[in-house]
Image (cartoon, rainbow, N blue to C red; front, side, top):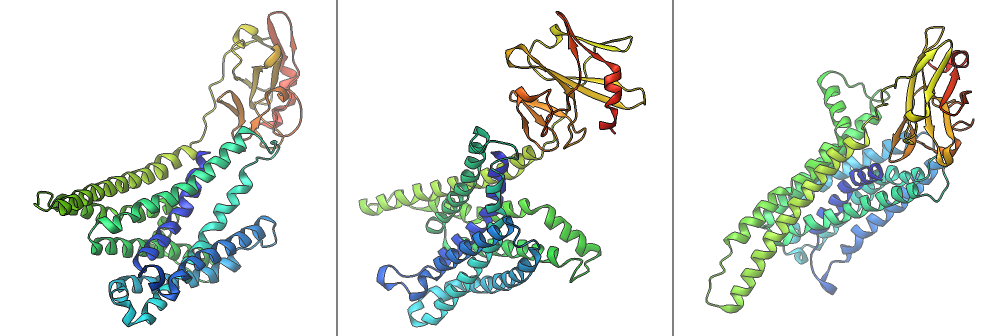
Amino acid sequence: MLKQFVTVLSGTLPMMLVVMCLGTMFTVGEGKSKPISAKWRSWGLLVGIVAAVVFATLRATAVITQRTSVNLPALMATVVADIAVIVLLVRAQSITSRWQEHPRHIHVANGVAAVAIALTTFFALPDVILQLTAFVEPGESPFTSEMLLRALGFLLGLASSIILAAIVRTLHVSAVRPFFHIAAVASMVLMFLQHLVALLQVMQGSVLRIRGAAFRMLVWGINHHDVLVQVQMWVFIIPAVASIVAGMRMKVRVSNIAERRRNIAFRRRAISCAIWSVAAMLGVTMALTVGVAQTKKVPVLSEPEAYSLEDGVATIPFSQLEDGHLHRFEYKASDGTVMRFIIIKKNGGAYGVGLDACENCGDAGYYEKDGKIICKKCDVAINLATIGFKGGCNPIPLPYTSDANAITIQTADLDALSAHFT
């Protein structure tokens, strides 16, 4: 769930901020007085979504195996559109003020914004959409609690991006307009940098040869995408602070009752918008630092436990296994290979005994989490009832015998399976 959440949030939030900024800065008029180009940005978003869905589908079905052939021209066009949008954003105040005197200017701005939104959406969404294919792991039933949690993480990530952009947008009406304008331009510049890094990454080695300091900067940009997303969100601290200042400076001790009520309402709204926006920024930072770190956390195998080894027989007493948890043991084979095997008490009192390795993933091993036995390499949860049987990612079965007090394993059987460990 967490992995889907942070992946979708990181992939969609920059796009949502672009849509929000361009929609806010180039919106003029109300009702019938809106320019004919007012809906172009919405059409750009729709076209981008449809194109992204088609591209993701073609990739998922292996119709397109080399996405570079599509991404390269798309990113080149996106970078050009970003530059054009930044120029127009800088001049947004002059374009939108008295726009009816020069309607062509607002039409050009909305047209370029629509193209930029479509291209940004097309580039951002395919990898997010392909997360849908990871809802069901290989070998799992289509309808499991894990599948539902992954789907929930996906939906929460998408909803969070929309809500976070909407929260930041409230600063447009509570802060002094120039401060929001500065943040919008800065956010778009950061989006341009993300697209430029992606373009140079695609071109590196085939079209360009980037070396030295430029290459190190490119690598940093590739490895710190989430940092750029956070900064893109944090630039709105500028209008947030301006909103608080504007609210605190608003005079509430005036003789006119109606004016006093308006001023008090503005102060509350300005401070509330700023607080919620800062909370949104902190939330994004937590999700893309702590959350991402948790998803990349590598499970550590538990330490091997002691057992009796005499006359070619390994003996593990039942009293050591009664807790129903995974128990790991280590053995040095006759050829010098250090091996591991695991034992767990299954439901119904039976025991699952096998190597700490499988045919598919080698000797990566298994670990226990939330009552489940999980393969460290492929992250697949093993059906507890199937441990001790061949197939899939199950531990390689290990012959054993048991009496009233213990499980015994012949070391000759362990020696015969040492090739599964390297």
